[in-house]
Length: 279
Image (cartoon, rainbow, N blue to C red; front, side):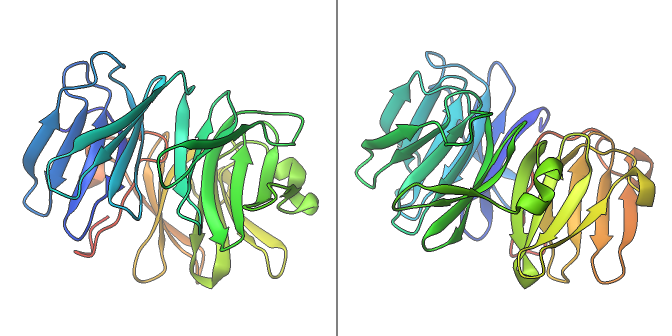
């Protein structure tokens, strides 16, 4: 039943939403830990079936992008109710919320779009990077700053008020070209998943970076999903294998189908953690 998932987002204490690549069932709501399917939505036929992104904002609204449409649902009453749809938005691959409760979306070819709390589109722009409009990840960094990655280009800070951008660190610009995932972890470190360049852990304070790749134990340099457990270990999925990385001693533990996993190949950025201590 749970095959070919394309997106996942935690909803509350013991539940989550999952998007599928399926041509029949598009969005599934799952109650954990019993894995009881409560609801499947079949209302995407006119928009497309491939769920690319999921995000739940502070107003308890579910944002989901499938192919070239962005759909917003009110989930405060339990069952999702469609509030608004946007078409011709591009292939949205990342969604985040800033300190003003505005929603930022990043497209693989249309740059960044910002939506207000009233669900009105406030701004669409191509970041002033000059090299790439393929926005692979956006995350909040502070009350005044977001971070985004532009594939084939670099990682940037962007001011949420003036929308001015600056590179994360010019020292590592040539290392940040192929980033597809960004996550902040303990110690104010920024963890980066890449296509082909392994896992990078960057410290803004010391402006230093540690790289995990083929050379120190990974079987794949395509790093997709990233999660941190309660002990401060990183769990990363890749194009081949799942890995637990102890950041205190840099030891890596690999997991493959022989160890009981469901498969060895994972989908981009598909990961989640829950208060039940499950990842």
